Image 1 (cartoon, rainbow, N blue to C red):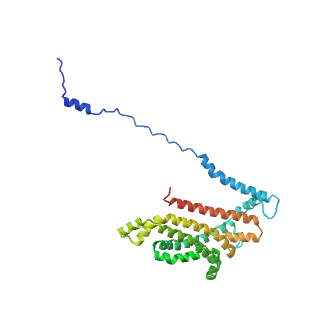
Image 2 (cartoon, one colour):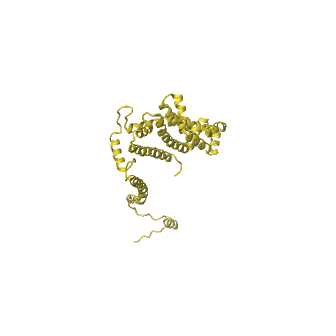
Image 3 (cartoon, rainbow, N blue to C red):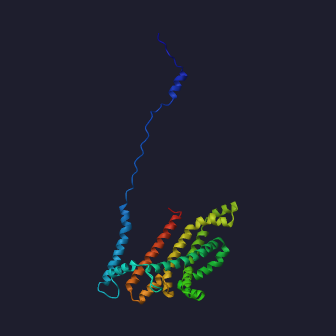
Length: 294
């Protein structure tokens, strides 16, 4: 006996609508990580031009000194540098200090003068940029004093402090403060007005406006002023130490000139340039870290 099974039209329509079930698939294998190829052309463009420039400088120097004279050759200067840096922290009294101590003494003066300038200059820049009355009152004074040579302030420091070391720090302070004041004030003035309107709507206090709105927006301008100030301070400290004496890279250069040791003067020039370049790199990296630009 054969039995037949009948399906209603509704059951057939349900089966036709039902989507087909896909067979289970294996998990996709994780693609292997590929290393980015090294851009050798970019590396060469970064490394080769500075090396060629330095080689060109040494070559011209060697050609200019091959017939002798008071100016030392690159080989003689290199030999003097090896002996000099063999004991950079030598200390045989106040007039016989190694080059390491002289560099550290100059950096200490720069740090103190620059730090005081930052403590005064950055808040002053906020005040000038935030309040129009303060801007109209202080901006003419800045325009009057900013062009004055930093070394012109050194006698004032000697008169007031009666000592060479505070006078040198004072000179660093007065030459470092202007870039920070100007850049900070410009940054505050360029903050979009919409930000300040939001602060007025929220009825934020002046302290919160400065710390929550102005400071994040002005930080790149502040760091630009800091970078310019450090470069100026490192330039000025050498000249200030030549006039004030004591321990420092500027005094060391002048002392070597009195000893007619030109090789050490050339070494000091390279050392001053390298330290200034290192300070510039550090502050540029810091400014790039806090910049809003890609």
